Image (cartoon, rainbow, N blue to C red; front, side):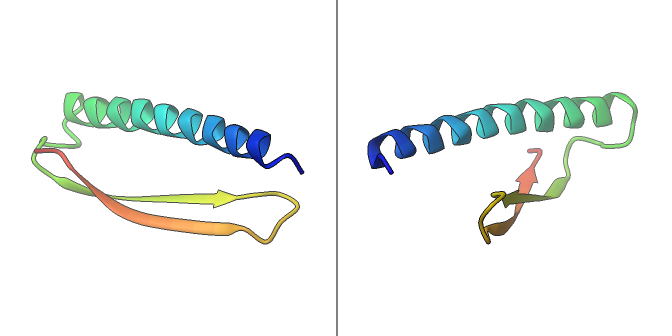
Length: 68
């Protein structure tokens, strides 16, 4: 295994994950506010699960997103 290449590929994946997740969270919140489902002052719980096929990785991360 080429560790330098592996490290760069992991970083690329995480960058894509972060950008996509942020965009989708923002879209969902704005949509929720627009349709009255959210007021805009909530703290929302969030969960992400990452699995890596071919390995035993099954990682779950919980957190919160405050809207104010």
